[in-house]
Length: 357
Image 1 (tube, rainbow, N blue to C red):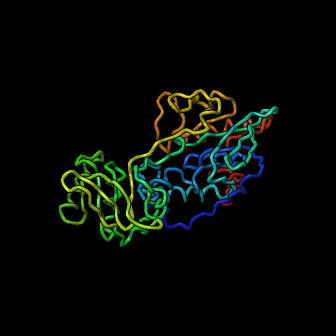
Image 2 (image 1 turned 135 degrees about the vertical axis):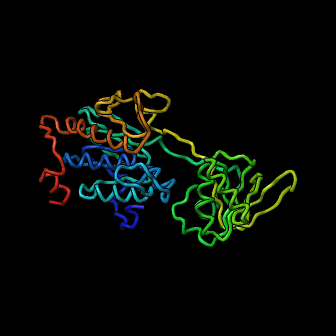
Image 3 (image 1 turned 90 degrees about the vertical axis):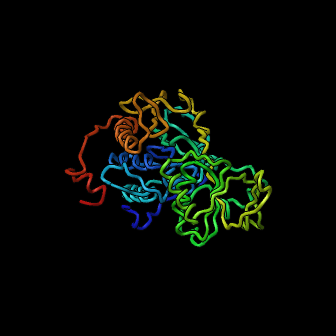
């Protein structure tokens, strides 16, 4: 992995409920939104970033922080968290302001043409440019239908793995039959005290290679496979002691565990962005391919949230879209000013901004 050993970069978080003004509002703090901060910063445009998660990184930090990514240019392999940390380090010279754990709730265009964004916590941000970099929207895990589940969430029931070490020497149960469930069986089995995979049928949606590896671990006695229905949780005060299961053959029975990791997939919700007055195409935002501007002048969409002919949902494509968006954003935020295209390799002005001159 590359960049994973770097010290975490501190982000500047704003107080919720206050009013702010800036050059560009970015909705979404995933890799594409973070790189957009860099491209805007090179043009002296300040950015405020709004995200419903409690940390920057989007899907990379929330869903697979320790999972390797292989298609980032010049990085043969980097984890989701490693990529996030590197991007945060890259934008550090531009001092972006983050509004985390807040959903963008409402948007209005003011008489002077600027946008005023309001979050669910009462924060307002005013800017001449709005950039939507919200991936597929807000990701909501599909949860098992179990009574009392909320009591255990965040303590003993998890929908993502943020730190593998959290599960070292623990008795864990992983529920699900897709790629996420199988991936974490393979990754956590070597460090957990015991690993049990529960799925309602002996047929898996995961990659065949992962399924084969899982079955090999089962045959070696390193993983327990239960073809069963997950029915309930056993424990107290949010601390699990077992999960209860049921099959026709065995009836009701329990499996000892300290943690339940439920991977039943994710539901994408566009949320209030759908009310921004944009022309949506199957919950995606159509844009042009010159500026990646939406049907509403001054609002841009980059990354997985947008749609155009030939679109590829790749992080590197989102980086390209962010670079072109920034050029167009400058003309809106700085009307009348001349835009001079410069290269970071040869421009001492850009190098001074980056603190490397």
